[in-house]
Length: 115
Image 1 (cartoon, rainbow, N blue to C red):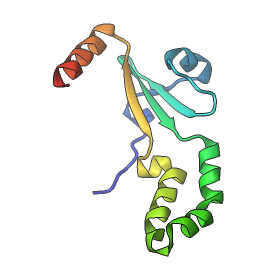
Image 2 (cartoon, one colour; image 1 turned 90 degrees about the vertical axis):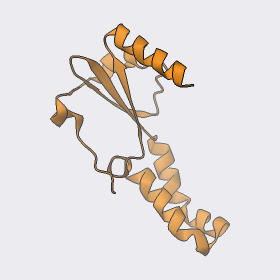
Image 3 (tube, one colour; image 1 turned 45 degrees about the vertical axis):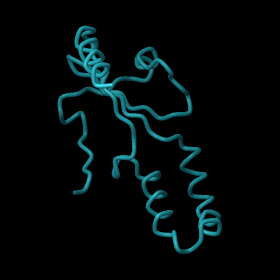
């Protein structure tokens, strides 16, 4: 089974401007790429690796091959590919923030009971 990225805009979400979502994200960091989408019930936040990590991964690829050896080149290649093409491979974080506080409280209580 392969991963397929589904654009939230096609699912009824609207993209949120950066000035609005800085207040929404509690631990906002300037170097991390965020994509925030909004619908009537919730916000959808996608968090991606910083550009610096992607560049370092590309530049250090030959060093990784030397350190880990040719026997693990396929694993190194897969990891590099996942970092470079995060949307295509699904290697990003996604979270939902509910606008209605009672929905979020119910989910938090359920998660606490599971632990």
